[in-house]
Length: 251
Image 1 (cartoon, helix red, strand yellow):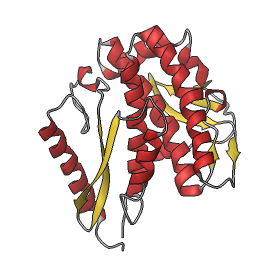
Image 2 (tube, one colour; image 1 turned 45 degrees about the vertical axis):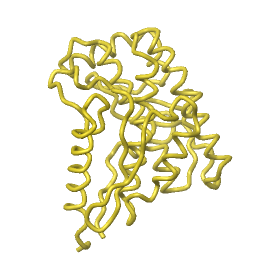
Image 3 (tube, rainbow, N blue to C red; image 1 turned 30 degrees about the vertical axis):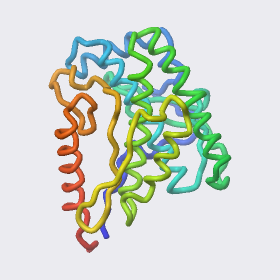
Image 4 (cartoon, rainbow, N blue to C red; image 1 turned 90 degrees about the vertical axis):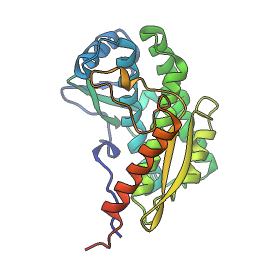
């Protein structure tokens, strides 16, 4: 059966990159951050700096979680996603790629111990200190930023599940990942919906990323600001569209 492929953000260079636009991840928590937020606000056509900061942080989370979780669940590789090991590419007011100086180990089994280590490196040693810095510098609420982390994990895992013959394959793993950290627990719900010949993994946010405050005023499909009925309808449409496109037999 055909299944949706992963996009480019699920791959990342290995090794400390060189070249224009690459920076160590710690620049996102220092004096450069206000300028980056201003650039992102212009790119998003919004004067709402808090919304721009929240969405810029979403990009950082997405660029980190995508390749880390893809390597973990599709390759059985455990990546060190601590801030010290993470590099980010910045271009045009956007964060469009991440790189990791080294893998933790190529052949460590994916078990409870290694998953705990992965979550500790990615959340406690990367996202948690970044959130404190972003909250202090940009005044985005901590719950908003942690909600972006939870949603980023759930979105990455949904995309990874959708590449499988069972597009809800990693539903239980997703719930387990979110439950491993007290700050992501209960910030994003996961479920599966029937469409075509399968059940498809979905999720819904319990916090808002503030995207509706940007220039086009749009809402994401899982936005917590939307009425529950509208949010459910958007999610069903997304799944139905995926099933209609990808459930035909492979040629």
